[in-house]
Image (cartoon, rainbow, N blue to C red; front, side, top):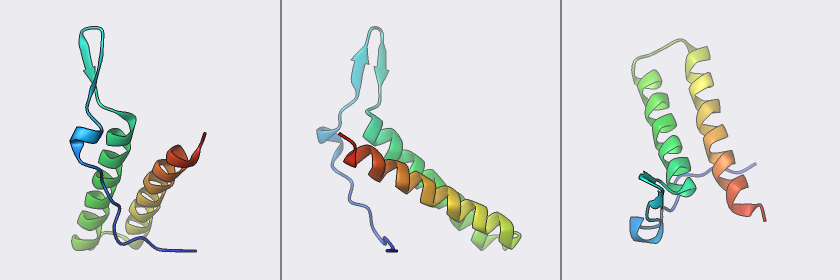
Length: 77
């Protein structure tokens, strides 16, 4: 088991959006990093607002899942 305090994020110039027809799409890495940030914010709000401990735990597990998806997507293939 290990714990992360920081996740290194490459600058946006190394993960620019792509064009698909008339649409501009964010890179998958950017989307995964955004989910981690959103999960972290939700966990912080649940903790600061003294929510039910089960809610804080659920938010923590959501954050862990977001980080797992990022690392699994980087190591596959």
